[in-house]
Figure 1 (cartoon, rainbow, N blue to C red):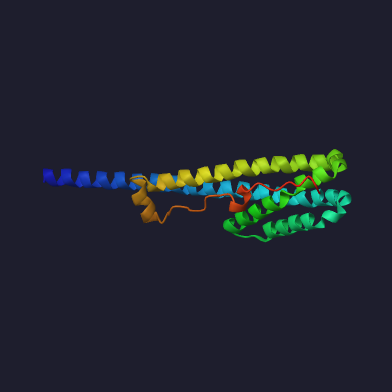
Figure 2: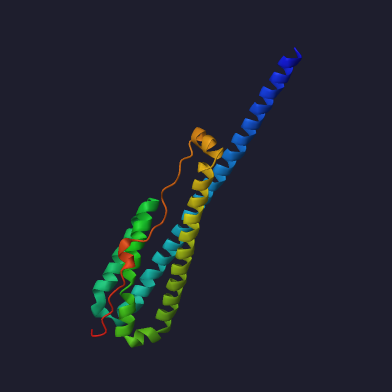
Length: 190
């Protein structure tokens, strides 16, 4: 009888320990999953901020560079693509297209020196630059959140609890568009 009680107490302790481990791991996985969602939301907020700044920037540039309509149209189209994107992957791809479309704006400044000195253009350009920095920081935080989540759910014993609770590794790391690695051509002869 004494051996049975010791065995029963041991089984109960193992069950209590396993349940506590499962509960603690699952709560942490839920928290880390929400951190990934919040990190992407931060990217999304900054992408929206940038999209809101662009019409003002385009309107300012239009006043100085009417013949550069192609650049402005490409920026407007890329912005529209960003605003219609729904999924995180679509938003990240649209963001990359917008980043590439914004590159020729530098050439416009060189072609139209009076545009550089325009106070409103300078303010908008500074805002856009600040937003680009915020987006870069948000992307890094997003990738760090995914890494933290993935490492946690793949470590023992969390990997057991993760598979039981339905948590799977996330693959949505932000990666730069391959086209953005190519430096834009600057033509001073134009």
